[in-house]
Image (cartoon, rainbow, N blue to C red; front, side, top):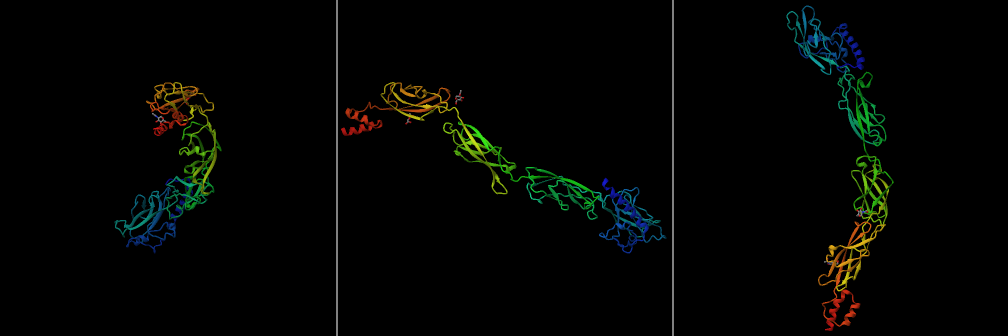
Length: 524
Ligand SMILES: *[C@@H]1O[C@H](CO)[C@@H](O)[C@H](O)[C@H]1NC(C)=O
Ligand SMILES: *[C@@H]1O[C@H](CO)[C@@H](O)[C@H](O)[C@H]1NC(C)=O
């Protein structure tokens, strides 16, 4: 593992310990042989000779295990490090003996002095790469190479030093929490890992702290749960926070290694803001000819919330003749669009005052009712150039079938409804009077007979009369004039003239024929 400057202290400590440890076997060589255990029967002699060179490192919690040796990882002194010494009871001087090492790393990582039984580590070891090596040792006759006892197995354990900093493998993190959450609300949890030995020492004992993000957030030093630490955090004030978390090993104490990560915390919206009209009074000028359903003006209530919480619906809640207008909500722009429900008429009503309301779709979490705001809308109707208007849509006139030319049949009237009313001129649509039966006075609308009538051919002459403004000939209107030709009874039988004269004087025109028949019956 690469060394960091912060590990220097640890290294000094390690070296001292090693020096001391390696001294132990030489100064108190008497092995504690009576408690030896063996993996293999028949190898007691050798195992009794396995000196627990580093027994000082074997903590009480591990217990004494006699077939283990320990070597500290990451040792990088100039000379090979002494791991321990093998010793056999057979080594009493009479027989020339030889210690032989086999198994994992024998001859490459671990070397044995065949005479003294000293085992040295030749290379720097990394516990996080390989934590233990299984080896066998055997005593042979140096001259004959004959084994003097069966091989016995032992383990060299690589002992941890704190050479791995905590790491947040899942970081950087993102988390979200509703705005205005209570203090103590859990936001998220982070996790750091430490490659060092979790059961030995504190090299992997982590403590979490917050480096950036106070006073808004806190972290539990042991569980690494991040919580809200400040009351009333408002998304509309600030939406995003960068929190920096540190994990430190050695239980957080000095000399421990540390790692950091970031957590980007986003506050999510709650509906805590009302809609607010950008103005309290809106004024619109709407031309009177604006069609029904056409937009006549827009209002907008702004809401500092977002998404559904910012959505409002608009309504007309008061005003004169409020059924003339309606207000709809534009889902895209969140504007209230004022539209006509009935036609406007400048000549009858020139202005309107309405009260409009914007109400949130979602409810205010505190009161349980929607947030609202109101505004006044004043509408001025704009006069527009309108065509002339006939006094009736249809005129029904009558003329005697034998009426002479130039008889006045009736009069139609039309006038310009605009304030600056224009004079009107009248015409007969000649497509509806192909025979040019009638004339009309262009100035006063008086209709006269142009040719003699013949009731036998047409009982009705339905013609179209147009009225145009003098000021603008394109401003034009039409009316139907239905002219009924009255029968003068030119084919009827002869009757007493006095009766007929009397009846005609008092009877209504429509009754004339019926009465004739009645009289006929009585007379006959
Ligand atoms: C005349 O009336 C027509 C139809 O309303 C209109 O389009 C046109 O602009 C008017 N012309 C003038 C000069 O006012
Ligand atoms: C003319 O108008 C009158 C009255 O509206 C109607 O009764 C009649 O049927 C019409 N005649 C024709 C030929 O359209």
